[in-house]
Length: 609
Ligand code: F6R
Figure (spheres, protein in one colour):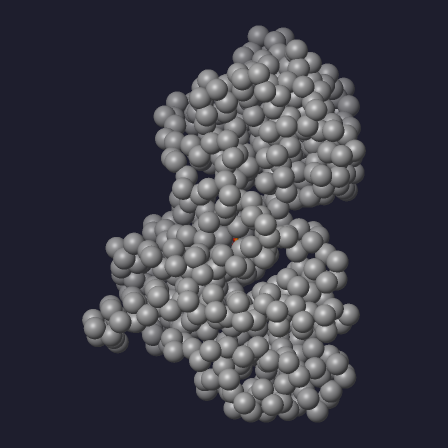
């Protein structure tokens, strides 16, 4: 949450223009307020305000600030209201030390009180501002006889919590100071310019050479050099060249990233399924060795984990499997030992709730296999085996292509286990993998093309509704849960998903004429029962929307149907059946006048508990 960018250059360019462009790429991480500070001829210049980057830039001309070093921030509020004062950057009392921060300083009240007793004046309610004042205090105490880096290191020993920090000081006007603990920070390297940002797309337009700062590392950037150290020892930076293109982080003619990303699913799935078989085999071995398996994730990634849970349940019979929402990890901690395997699923690879489960689990000897989209992020670095979804950067806050890619990768893994356990012959296995690899992108493209207009049409029907139900049964529940989450998070229509059989135990009470009920009704064992549940809803006047595979009984009983091709590989259903629901959520949000890329109160990478 919150987006950070810092740039130092020896070229003549003003960094404020580059910082503004980079902040636009980070806006998905927060958009409550925005600010930039530069150092120009030894003096700090700073502009910040409440609002999106475009609005604030129009009002204050952020990109006209002068200077060849600067930092910028787009905020997702944690401590303190959404106000100009609380917008980053923050400064010390002298205005010479400027800081931006992502994360939470847990002991900030204590620190703030001590600093205030020592005469410091605070301008904001944020936890982040203490960092600038602590730096000022350290330099003051040592009467400036302390190098800036040593003062910075002393500050870090005083703060508790999570952070990605970038700091500049007018007294050292070409250096950026960085530190990371549990909040992401990556460095971009170009010959005459160095970047630090919360995420790679921020500087992808300028460089593809990336160094991922690891937990506990401290760094300084000057236009010519990157210096990193950890626990007092120098760390040799290991830059990697990222294959993502700058275009992949742009809208390329689509009105929103979300729509672009929905349309990118065929290619994201193709790339993801074209995975390294050796890694899948290693993960399969871990699954077979484990005595119990926990699927651990949050939000949309949790729904992908649920599909994995149901698939593996079918294959692994009595082996105990658990599905755990990561923020609820403590409830399951008694299950963790060296015979436990955790399958952690995360798009960003940085979700703190997931990390907070993995950290104690690993200490207790559990094995960790992760399914992640962002290469070299914290979760894969903490895992024994990392499987990557190759969906490319996802900018829309609502996950779409990374979700179906997660489902596909888990399905691929499930097939491997089915083969390795002896439930599938080698020939059968080869055929099904071939089918999976070729059919998945094809069928996905077909469904998107055939249903986009229908989704748009249907959106106009439900746009004025306040509630919607999503019903399914058994292993189709993750589709209903994900469909409801998508609609709720971007269109703000209250949407709930539950097993269809449960509706008569309470939820049906609020169904009235025209109440939208979305039935996930594929051609499987659930079809007949879904039919009965549809009748119950129809009898109360509900507006029935079905997602079916040409089942005429359900189509006849529906007011509106998304009719999908018959799915020959059942493992694909959580992919095929979610596509119309992603588009329905998208078009409903747009028709209600909301920006689906930036749902209110949400951020793409959630690094708070
Ligand atoms: C919803 C959405 C979130 C994320 C959740 C976990 O569309 O994107 O629910 O799935 O915040 O994030 P990751 O996958 O980065 O761990």
